[in-house]
Length: 426
Ligand SMILES: Cc1cc2nc3c(=O)[nH]c(=O)nc-3n(C[C@H](O)[C@H](O)[C@H](O)COP(=O)(O)OP(=O)(O)OC[C@H]3O[C@@H](n4cnc5c(N)ncnc54)[C@H](O)[C@@H]3O)c2cc1C
Image (cartoon, rainbow, N blue to C red; front, side):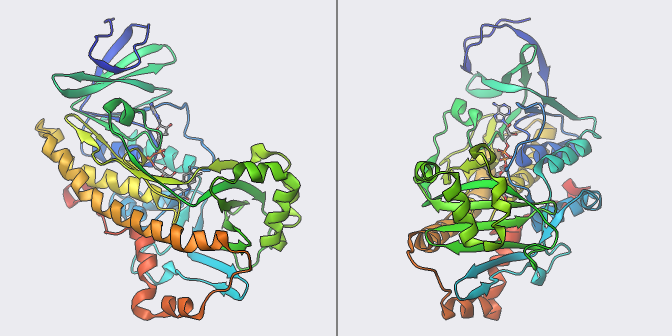
C-alpha cells in the first residue's frame, strides 16, 4: 500500500491506496458515452478500464432512445441484430396535437438508412448489452461501485485517477483519462474546467402511466405532443407503459407542487383527456422526477492526459432527445482519432485538441437549434393563455419537399454524420 501523495486533485481521503492498476485508457463513467468508448477501444486491443460509481446501470428516466446513427454504428461492428433481440419499441416521428388538429413535422421513415426509426429500450438494458459485449474482449476491465474522487497529476499531466470502492481507495494509472461522468461531472471539476451555462425557459416532470392496450389509438411508433394552456405533455409509447413528460415554465416547480396532486392530475387530463383514468395512479410526488432543463458547454474540455466526452463536456437540452446520440458520437470520433496514438504510446495534447475541434462545431450548431426551438417556440407555447393553433405557413413549411426531411436527418444523425473509420470497425 502507498500513501496518497500531495499532488493529487480532489479530496484527500484518510485511507491509504490499496492497490494500483496500470492501463492505457481509464474511462470514468459507464453511461452511453463512456461505455461505447470503452467497447470500441477494447475491440481495438487498447487496454481500457471503465470505472462506474453505481453498482448497476439502473437509473430511471435517463433517456432510452437509440438513434439511427447509433444503430448504423452497431451495424458496423456487427451488434445491431443482437440489439434488436432485446424488447424494444420503435418511434417513427412525433405527432403534435393542437386546437386545430394534429401535425406530424418529422417522419423518420423517409430517411435513407437501414434503420429509419428511433429504437427505444430501457437504458439499463442497453448499457448491460454493451457491457456484456465489451467483456468479450480481454483488454476491457469494468469496475462497478467505483467512485472516482481524485485525479493523479504529475509533471503537468493527468496520469490517472483514484477511486473509492467498497473496500477502500484504489488507483488506476493511464496514458489517457476520459471523464464521461455526465452532467454533474466530478472529473470536470477536478480538472478545473468551468462550463458556460445557458438556461432554458422550461423544466420537465417525468412520470409513468399504465398502458392499457388499445388506449391512445394510433400512438404506436409515435411521440405524442399535446399542448395545454401554459403547459405541454410529451408522451412516449413504452410498450408496457406510457412515459410522460409534463413540460412547464422554468421556476414554477414549487407552484406546481403547492397546487397539489389533484390539480396536477387535472392538468394532465386536460391536455390528454383519454388519460383521465390513468392519472389516478399518480398518488405521490415521488412517482415524478424533476428534470431541471439547462444546457452548457466547456470552452475547453481537454488538458495533457485528460479529455471529457458526452454530457461532462457539453450538456444538451432535452429538445429532440439527442443527448445519448451526441455522447456516443463523441466516443466514435475519440476512437477514430485516439486509437492509433494510444496503441503506439504517442498520445499528444494536440490529438485531444483535435477531438474537441471536431466535436465542438456540431455541438454548437445543435445547441443553437435547441435554443431557437426553446426560446421562440416552446416559450411562446408556455406563455400562451389560449389554446394554440398551428399556423398554415408552419404546416406548409414542413410539407415542402426539400425542407421536410432536414429535421428528421438532424434528429437521426446529428448535424454531421459520424462513422467509425474502417480500421476501427473490423
Ligand atoms: C430525465 C432525463 C431524460 C433524458 N431523456 C433523453 C432521451 O430521451 N434521449 C436522449 O438522447 N437523451 C436523454 N437524456 C440525456 C441523456 O441521458 C444524456 O445526454 C446521456 O446519458 C449522456 O451520456 P453520458 O455517457 O455523457 O453521461 P451519463 O449517461 O450521465 O453517464 C455518466 C455516468 O458516470 C457515472 N459517474 C458519475 N460520477 C462518477 C464518478 N465520480 N465516478 C464514477 N462514475 C461516475 C454515473 O453514474 C453515470 O453512469 C435525458 C436525461 C435526463 C436527465
